[in-house]
Image 1 (cartoon, protein in one colour):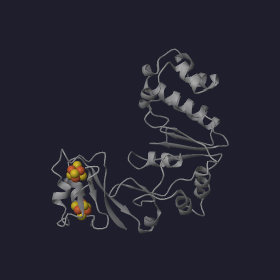
Image 2: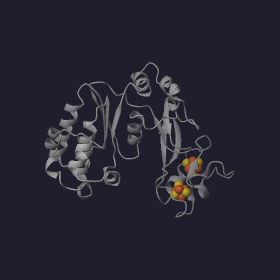
Image 3: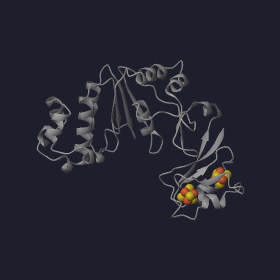
Image 4: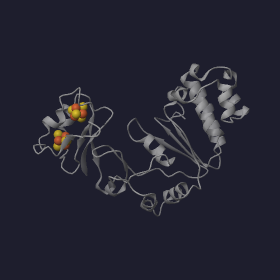
Length: 268
Ligand code: SF4
Ligand code: SF4
């Protein structure tokens, strides 16, 4: 078992703390165990030199560091890492044609990273600085369903659609009334009716609630002609009845396709 100290870059704020992780690390006398990255200004921890004592975890005022116990056998299966000392994503769920694959877990476990990789938006770097060519990514999954999946995705034989997690961003990119947006996105009337969106046709997108934006985003994704449908947290802002309705529509419209649903819990 390997103990690794991992920095959550979003929580780390060296300008507002006393850089306790650097100050109190017992093995940092050389300054090579914990340091501030020049490019990002955030703390970085060397996984080779860190002994996993956990002192920095307790000293960091923002709770930005966690200790992860990692079985040795996973070491060769690292799929992606955003930056040195950051969290590592090990393994990937394999999408299956004709099935809905669920990815569940609490925040900051890499669910959105998984969604972006499976959608082909983020190239997995196999945890190597400088990244990895697509051919090597495909090879790294040899003998598994993911080898075929990535081979087809990178060969443009699969078209993927990704319903993003942060639907609050939609009004920043889309302007106009719901009816106009639905027309541009070619959302079928039947889908608009089933998701209760038809009655909002005259409303400006900036006036929609979180739940209404969520349903519009799901409908727009389902209206696209694709082979792979990826939904990142499609139940957020929806009540129980709407969640069931959205789940039914997703199941029905993605029949025979690849579908992946990322969620916090078993709400969908
Ligand atoms: S990890 Fe914590 S203690 Fe270290 S620089 Fe970031 S916020 Fe400060
Ligand atoms: S876990 Fe211990 S050795 Fe590793 S960086 Fe934190 S204080 Fe240093």
